[in-house]
Length: 224
Image (cartoon, rainbow, N blue to C red; front, side, top):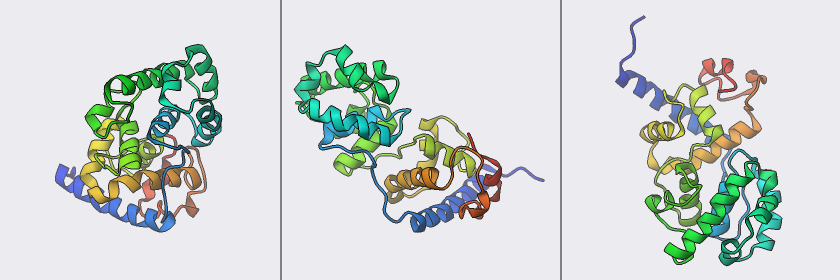
């Protein structure tokens, strides 16, 4: 068997993701943010807390957190040890507390207390990488500069042979070439819903999975 050229492989992947995305749209016609928040700052906090944590658990924590810390200044003047305990259940709480409180100070000192609207500015904020920045920009400002690659999106892309990379930033770059920009924002949430409701990161009955029919090799790949 002759090895496929980069162009042939790219065209195959582009056709495959189009079929997969069309099916995802039928399965999940309405998708969006599962985290609860009341303003753009709370959105940023919730997304930072969601790293290595379920949205359900984050929502449980922020329900109390956002009542206790109502304004940006409440975070600026928060006691670190107390704040750590307030978010402890989200995991990695020491690092998350350090980042959230540092982010609050930066927003107050450099951004007039407002969450910035550009990727470059957001990436300066402690605890914010491209995934978080993409989520915040899309949900806060309807600005789409890339594709948020979380664990569900990463697993989806590797399972379905869409990318060569396993680094989220590189996966994002490859995905942005495969998908038209108008699909970037909602693709993330559809891939997340697929992972949550149909395809967990463990063995399951793939005969009931409508996407595996599009790409049968995915039936042998689970945890990636």
